[in-house]
Length: 297
Image (cartoon, rainbow, N blue to C red; front, side):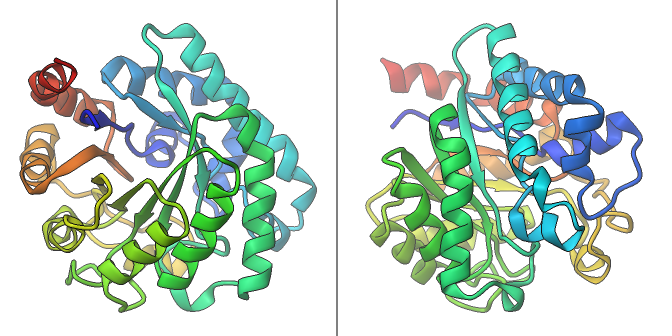
């Protein structure tokens, strides 16, 4: 597998450009209020060098929508996200792949609040059914527990499309998920359910080496896309990104230095998550251009 560059964090980039006040569903609301802005951010990530862009549907899960009394918006929001991604690809050179998105269902970073296994399976299948005909692969992302890794991966793999599973790590110990479970246990569970690659995401870049070390010999491609938050604690406490602070020491060059370390461990899929913008992806694409050329050769 040649080195693949992912896009960066759609949500924070959209928030910055739109000037919107963040709510629990703000990244879904922008699909209605400013769909062209969503397409433009996708375009900017492709122009920066992303080989894969992910649908802006992270917060549009049935559970989150039902909590806000707008579950009837599930299908319109899914289709709006699909439309925005396809318009961006159609307007851009090259042929970036579009990834469907299977996020944690009730909310991020809180493994103890997951749905029952049966309810989660049904909900993930509903998301897969909405997206499968319109995407090239699926990414199960920001997955905080072994059980959710297994359930989300199974639902995505049932589509017959390539499936990647990305796990989110304890902020101080990259050996463990946010649930406290070993990262390699979750990675192996995902592979058993059909994952063709395992990654870590939305975690501090300092934690990722330890996780990749533990996934390097599992027999599938590995990868990483970190966040640029000082801490996710304010998000867990409030349910929004209002109080989350962006790191001042993670400019594109600094982020790329972390990514070089991930590649040295064996990462073949590298991108960015929250607070990692087009400039960061451009730096990754520039640095790894020679690696990609050598892989193709």
